[in-house]
Length: 109
Length: 115
Image (cartoon, rainbow over all chains, first blue to last red; front, side, top):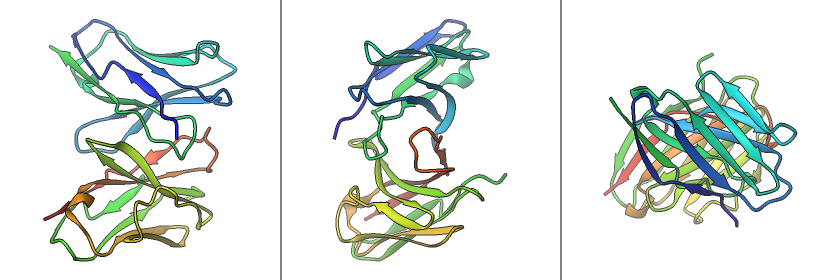
């Protein structure tokens, strides 16, 4: 089945800089777009989500934007901190699909 | 809330042995999911249940894999016989519903090594 395409696969930023991760999907029926963060030795944890009737959602330093026309949604992290270092996943539009390979974010102090 | 609880955290076994992974979902969640994570294939769905009934097991790789959910608070994933290529981290997750607009709550996984 189709998967989501996530870019980049790795991202290294300096503490305080911003990080942007993008996911592209092909299922027009998708209406829910969550982002998960996975720290070493733990399961993925939801950090933010957005529904298709909203273009942007913010939660402190984290934001998600959605472009339904272009079929992509992005995770934005501002003022990055070392504890933001983790693997980030966007979820596929259907349960049966595989998650993307994720983006490994490294925030250098 | 205790979150999703998985056991054991680590399992090392020899090829051919039976392996049983356990999961306790969050109380009140109606849906339970089993995922497998590897470097090669990423995070893939194996099977999911709604109200203790298996809904989609198309992700189960082979007949060697089986899953049960005898009640709302417990599920098992069994591999018999195990093979080295089954080595992976297995995650259990629960959610309020199988609807895709319901967030997943993952446990911390079971790291399985088959030698």
